[in-house]
Amino acid sequence: MSEPGARPTFAERLEDPLSHFPYKHDEALAAAGSDPAAVAEVDATAAYVAAQEAYLRDPSEETRAAEREAAQALQDVRRERRQAREPQAEPDDENTEG
Amino acid sequence: MAVTVSGLYVANMIDVFDATQLAIDLSLTSHKIALLSNAATPNFSSDVTWNSTNEVSGTGWATGGVALSAAAAGATSTAPTNTESPTGSQMYDMGDISVASTTLTNARAARIYADALAGDNLIVLVNFAADYSTVNGTFGIVWASTGVFAVDWTP
Image (cartoon, rainbow over all chains, first blue to last red; front, side):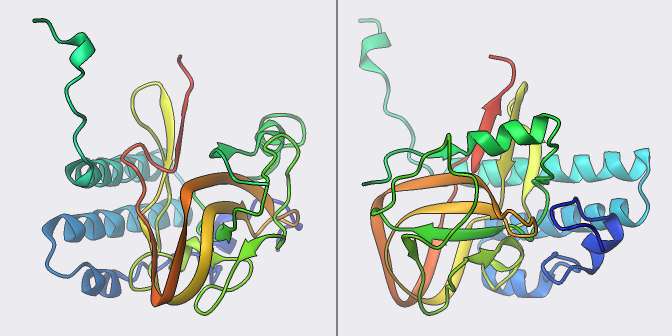
């Protein structure tokens, strides 16, 4: 094991009971229900966790790039979902001509 | 005595980047999210370590908080991400918090801290700006589209 306070090794991360490997895809889908945006986020999360696990098991430029790509894809899905439910800003009258 | 703003814990952020090399890994799911009442007065310059003073806990939400690996709907992972978003900025984000069957009183803020580190080092506090309670219900946090926090490295 790592020293207390030290960064865990990749192997330790994979075995840590507080890690998210393997991702509970079925449970997450059940919680998402029929909301397409929520399902899309669950699927993107599963892809990200799988890519992260692949990198931790076999660290390489390729697996690292795949993990970053999956993280960015997940981030994009989250942002789109949140922007859709956030109230849109009112037009700024001070900056409106006429 | 009140929570007035959200923020990152500056002393720990400095230690991440200096010779201390504090090992805060934002991709870990062993970090915990703990709740705080408005009786607290956070000091982002001097607060370093999580402790239970003024913590809000109860049924379904233990003292010390909930691990990020089980804090999303269905007790699944919030899957924290650490990405560049938008260009030039670093964003720390995760799935929304949704913990079922909780009974909690007057949660005003959430703190995320590195439970796996010996120092239980604090990372970020998010101010709800109001008190929230549950009675055998789901405690949820819906993050903004800008994530839990973002740092503009290219201002």
